[in-house]
Image 1 (tube, rainbow, N blue to C red):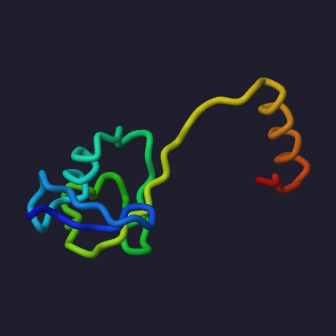
Image 2: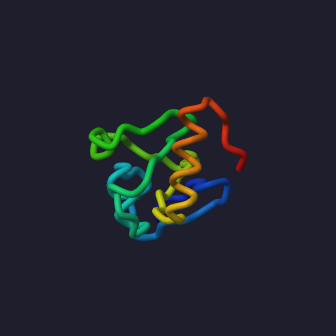
Length: 91
């Protein structure tokens, strides 16, 4: 039957997992690199070092943010200036 959960607002069925799996197993099943993501589990930040013991149950909600590097040197310098001067960046 697998594990059906909400990931970033979309229902997903992970057929390769039991109805109760660890958060580490879910991340592995999704093929994500653990050192490049942040996870919120049912509204709480999930501490990476505790993923192996965190149980994900049917109906749970995960929000996953993937870190992506990039930008130009000009963008980096502008970000530094804005940070130092207290300006907030618009997204």
